[in-house]
Amino acid sequence: MASTLTRTRPWVAALFLLPALALLGALVVYPIGFTIWRSLYDAAGSGFVGLKNYGSVFTDRSTLTAVKNNAIWVAVAPAVATALGLIFAVLTERVRWGTAFKLIVFMPMAISMLAAGIIFRLVYEHDPGRGVANAVIVGVHDTFAKASAYPGARPRPGGDLAATAGGSYTAKSSVRAGVAAGLPLIGIPATKLPAGTQDARAAPAGPGVTGTVWLDFKPGGGGRTGVVDPGEKALKGVKVEAVKNGRVVASAKSAADGTFALPAVADGARLRLPASNFAEQYGGIDWLGPSLVTPAIIGAYVWMWAGFAMVLIAAGLAGLPRELLEAARVDGANEWQVFRKVTVPLLAPVLAVVLVTLMINVLKIFDLVYIIALGPSMSDANVLALQMYLSSFGGNNDQGVGSAIGVLLLLLVLPVLVFNIRRMRRERRR
Image (cartoon, rainbow, N blue to C red; front, side, top):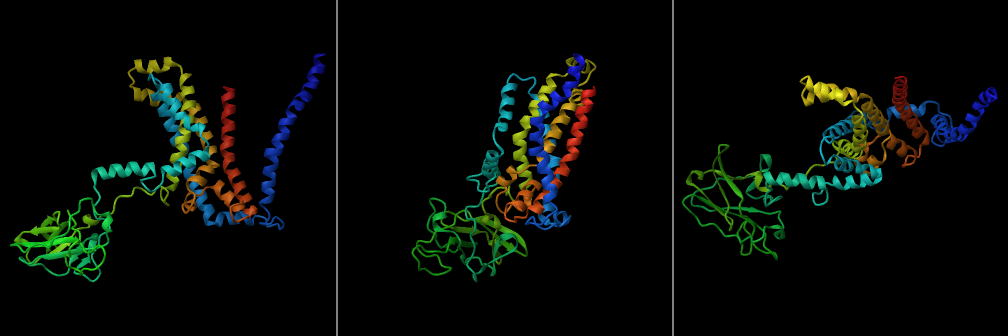
């Protein structure tokens, strides 16, 4: 009876495994085989081209950018997410509200990649009025460096004021004591002037150098160019410098009526309006520009997956033998030494699991990049999974090249999978 049962067990096992094997073959083996076969044919799938599609993959600029970005993703994202997970797990182990903190950090895992992409697309908006990141940065910046009240102001073309180095404007002629100078500017809508702006007044002649800075535009039209007409507005707080031989000898700021006065030492100098008078308002960082789009998307990924790393590492941390940690402390090790020389080595298997899992995950990253980098920056943020989609269905309609990229992606994932399988076998032997 026993021998009969022994002989029938393989058949019973095969019977139970058959549905799983059928699904595995239909959903994994067949697609892989078909993709390899399809990569050897042209875009239409009717002409055999051999390895030509693979040649196109390694010479196409977009695909090479995708390979470079994938390398950045693999090198940075898993390491940062794992490091943050380790820090969070260790720091929250001893605090009373640690469980609540872990719950908050893990919550982004409940959000789909699509929803996270939409969230961070809004976070990275360049307009500070809409994007959270730039709203914070502009707020901090403006706390320490105030923007000019007259951004974009400029002199009339052909006037006495001319553009000079650094964005400043300097008069072509010298000024004389006792003669009022005029510094007319344009380029500012009258509706954008600060509230309470007064009408400009022609400066009276004085013992030193006097003058007026004003908006040389009369509402309703009319008026004379370069002359303070009734109704024209003063530009208050504009810094005026007197320059002789390339050196500033005196400076002043215009009053509420636009007038200013310089001492007699300014006689014979040329008047200059520094660029600080016309500095544009700080607009924040171009997060989705060519140089920052990939790090910005990696930041969104880390926000999602740091909680995953923290939960796994915290589970491993809970299983550590506490007597080893206490023994290290008794021997005189401080907390940093205990963490670096005891905790981290004991957590090495768990850290390896987290790191390898995230590496596999980032190799096939698609949705975050597709949503956040939608638009001109997509070519700079391109990754292999996205390039495979674009080549196959996103306009190029070349499933031969798309299949070749899919095979390349499989070959990149295989070493990580093999490493993971070997690591698990070693763990079983222990």
